[in-house]
Length: 279
Image (cartoon, rainbow, N blue to C red; front, side, top):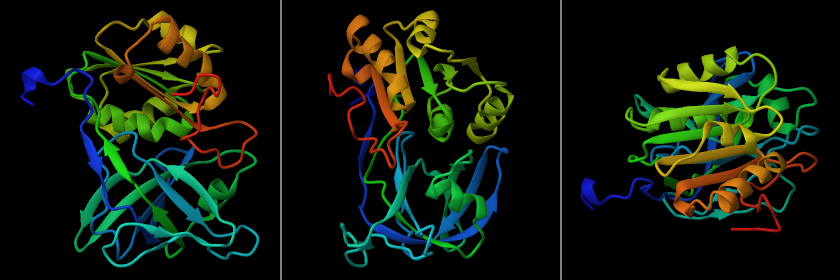
């Protein structure tokens, strides 16, 4: 398709080799106090690919009690597919950041949110050191940011800030961006994180408040606006209903994903946010 015929919300993409990659931590840092960043690499990362802001990998961590790492393994060198383990696993999904080549190796960053009462990922990340091992599965595929939208509204909680940083980086400079942060307290750290990770400062940032749907109503959504929302699934149900039912947006104009659900360990982000109205 020529540029003149590409729909404004079209998201290019494609599949990647789906495999399990043994990863080693080579650096640990803190882009902001609220996140720990682990930089990983491995012998099978040469063809690691991630070209979309909603890409995700599943990271498998050692058992917090025993230190044993149970994880899928690759079918074979260069092959597509994984062999799942029989033992229980400890895994969480993450947005891969900054895939890059450094000499003869490919590096990938994973930003892990630190919080009270940490689960296996945050507990592991808070003590991670170079040399630690984990297994990375995915991404299975990528969908790029739309290049023709006049405006984008990103509604995100801290679990989705890494994804939001990719949206900001990968949307064209011609797309005006409003970020609605579903976080309590001062937004200074949010702005710092998004600016430094995206390399972009021309976006507005507001707090989501008690009602995310109302926050989006206040901003307004017109025919040229793409909406991305991700975070705690229950918080997103009213917003999704607003987009789907009240505004009746076409499916290509928005993407809503639950990254976690209160009370559900290891929530599957593929699960319907609103079981009464699944996609």
